[in-house]
Length: 171
Image (tube, rainbow, N blue to C red):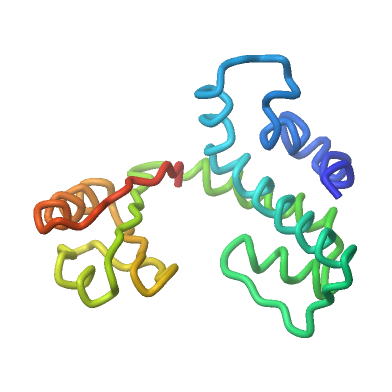
């Protein structure tokens, strides 16, 4: 599935999508540089799609066939490909272009942080402008907003004993 994504992303990305997923194949030892490249939105978006598509192919290979598919953000493209609405090549190209557009936006790129807290606890520690972007688990939420606002919310949460992990984002 990743070879298919590499071929489809040719001409839309600076390197094949697997270049960002498997930096060890490049023969370079700079893990921090590789992580930095992967976390640039114009690379992250198609990489997320490629991994999602590969996972749907892996599941299909062991007999798991979805009855319903859904997704959020890039996951919507993966779901559309899994449902046959678009082909995977279109999906990875659209995600690459989407990432390029997002990367090109100016101004504050914003920030995100994962908090080990339930939703009610997290809501008590938010500051104006910070929002709960996602509830990943009953005791794990993601907070987002402008960079300065998320930093203030993180400080407030940490002061209350909440474990906070700042996430690397580029948009």
